[in-house]
Amino acid sequence: MSTLIAVATGSLFVGGVVAFSFGLRRRPLPSGTHRTAETLSARWSRLTRRPSGRRGRNRDRLLVLGVVIGLLGYLATGWALLLALAPVLILALPYLLGDPPNAEADMLSSLDRWVRAMAANLQTGQSISDALRLSAKNPPPLLAEEVRLLVARIEHRWPLRDALKAMGDALDTPDADAVLAALALAAHRGGTGATATLDALSDSVQERLRALREIDAERAKPRVVVRQVTVISVVVFGLALLFGGEFFAPYRSGIGQVILAALLCIYFASLLGMRRITAPPRRQRILQEAGR
Image (cartoon, rainbow, N blue to C red; front, side, top):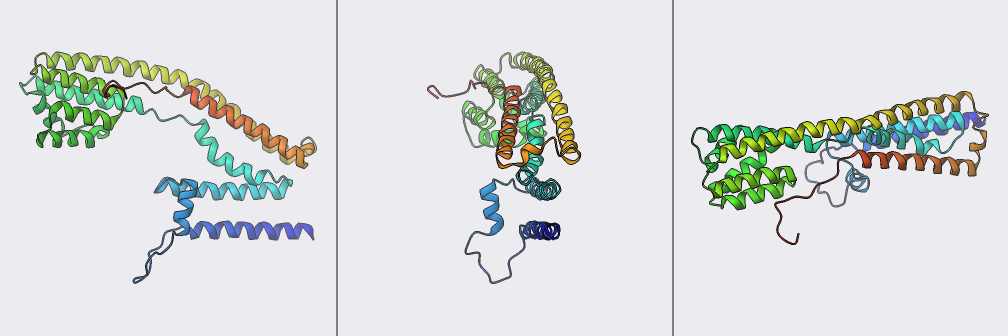
């Protein structure tokens, strides 16, 4: 009888989760109605900091999957901790064990393409301003919006130094600052030596990009090891939990569940610490006002 009640309770819980996920879908309001209060989906997005678009939908699906797996694990083992552990594992492990985005390398690659294109334009006798205008026709995708905005400011009679400074504030990276400062200095000198300056700057960017990729490869090695250890541990733990229940019997009690939760929190904290250690440190910018 107790097994039947547990199965019925689990079925109702899963049905409620599925119905809740369908309720989060956006539907057009009927004509003539006005939204007078915050919708359930908007409140969910605000409280859980849900990403917009496809990323948010994928996260909600993973959350529902984690809840279902946790419920099934609870029904199979009787561990209440699995109700919270499974969603946390599914949502947190890909972030903690994944490679952090290398935005610095992407920015360096885009800056190198942009600088080389302008250096080629300067060799034809163009001024710095003309080279910037020509670069807006086919800029690197990562810089496209800011390059076009830079050209628009120049067209609206902004001083070139101020326009470059505004672009540096928008990009907010020291590598972009180095390029923009060299452009401002070359323009201040009337373009004298601008081609040689940009060629040398491009070579420097490429050397830094190669060094950055080597450093990133070295930082990835401990993440690969920890990823393998974590996957093996989760698989062994799951199999042992299903087929070696007596070994984990002390964790079925209330104090055992608390101790296990504390151990898991320590492990998650160590993964978070590893991710922060292997992430590249943020460097200080150079195009900043005094006192900032």
